[in-house]
Image 1 (cartoon, helix red, strand yellow):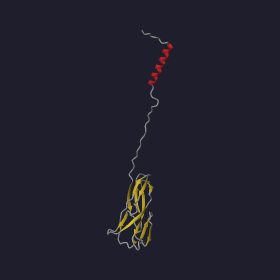
Image 2: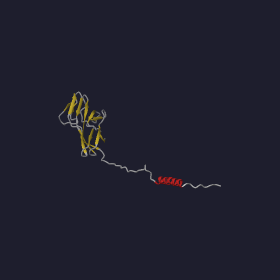
Image 3: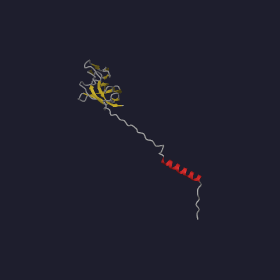
Image 4: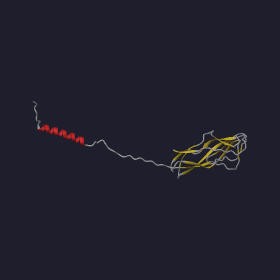
Length: 174
């Protein structure tokens, strides 16, 4: 036969206190849990664009023994070697209008040397190299003017004719 032993009042109080403390711990929310909200933003801006305004003009030339003709971004012409530059038409740098997000910085990519030629349409050509311009800038008020100069190589006894060609200029946001 088994005997049932009655616990002392002190033991019963201690057991009740342990059970109550355990129940209280299970009822408390986890103190390490917390939630915050983040913010996401985006702004869509006008695409950057470039448009040709004025052609690069080397002017009328006499080839002589050949040489080069440079036109600076300011439109100043400098012939060298045996090339003679005539007064009219006046030389000028090419100009482009760059439009985009006001205050945005941009970069300019000019043609590589050896990639641009002028042709008279009858198989005669002249190379245009050493393109120059500001390679970076900031769009103010929504648009900015970009000027481009370059150097034309004229051959010894270059064939007479009106030479023309195109060259790419690209702009990108920084």
